[in-house]
Length: 240
Image 1 (tube, one colour):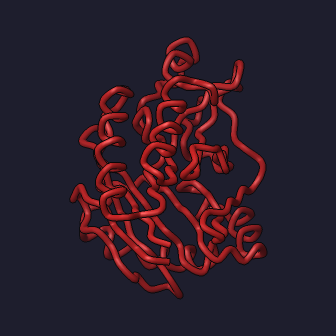
Image 2: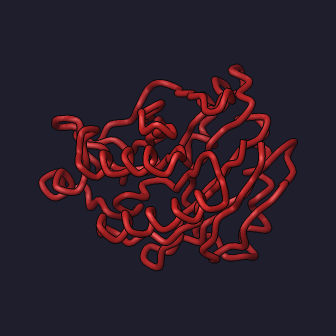
Image 3: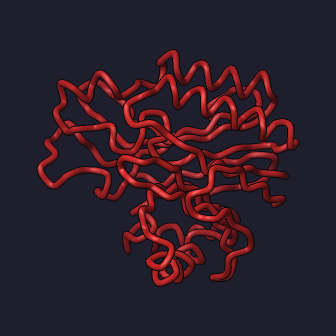
């Protein structure tokens, strides 16, 4: 199985632009004969799209039956490639930081609500809700665990993931380190990645405001197997 991790630019609050970027990278991954492509946390709206005023945010958050996700499902079907991406999900009066995966037939095989609280400001009210359940999914006969950013540093989440012994783990993150800061901190990511899965597929987006530099790589046994340089828009192709 060949997967692609998209270190792609997202535009804060501009869903149309982000869908165009997603489409571009899906086509490139498909031309590289990838079986799946994964995008970063909150990619559909951009990581900093929420201002935690529910009246505003409910216009940006998207339900599971929204046209935008239908478009992505159809794209997965038409190009014969599984697609995973993060988005802010509206569920009645609640908003979640979520991740969804469509298989190459366009069927939803996973959706996950972030369990850790790092996506919210301290004063976020009860409209902004964390998830509770670990999620896994299968593609091409391979099993993947799934968690978002700070989940990979939450002791309870790490313990539960470790007990599941996931062969592979998809870990979308938000990283704004400088190159020097990343060199000091990546070993912490490597250690936790080794607890999340046998091979952990970390994928970060790029943006100018707020600053995000990607951090897209594959970890195994606390070592980096392959990566994309920080700040460079590209696809990381890996055979599993």
